Length: 172
Image 1: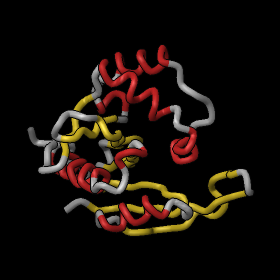
Image 2: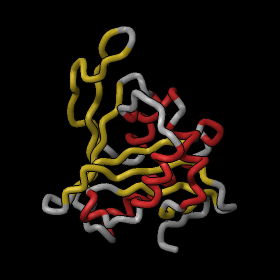
Image 3: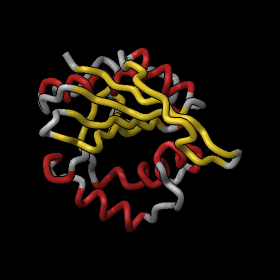
Image 4: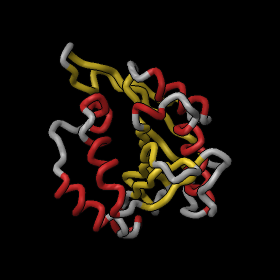
């Protein structure tokens, strides 16, 4: 398995992931980073799972499950806005609360970068992170991403507006 490390592996979505995704997607604590404003029904998620096998070249996105070597799902990692012409894609990651601070995010991001560079032949990956999201800022900086810009008042929050940092990594 080429998307595997000593800690975890990445795999395609399966129908058995419905309950895990239902809990993850309906956790309001992560809605702001995923631009979600309403809960997902199991029916909607089931339809998503049925269509998730579509090719990244047609859907322009890919979601992979992050699983421990004991086959326990711990999170998801996404490629979005896939641009084959310009050889780039956005990256997003969510780790379930019970599994945070155990190196799963860093390891999954490392495996995804390898996949992007060696199989999708991407030149670069990028992400957008709210300045209050210290854990994600640290994760992407530790993974070799470079801050390339600040978007002022980019995300509306209850207290007003929040800035975000744009990051990118050239894959070599």
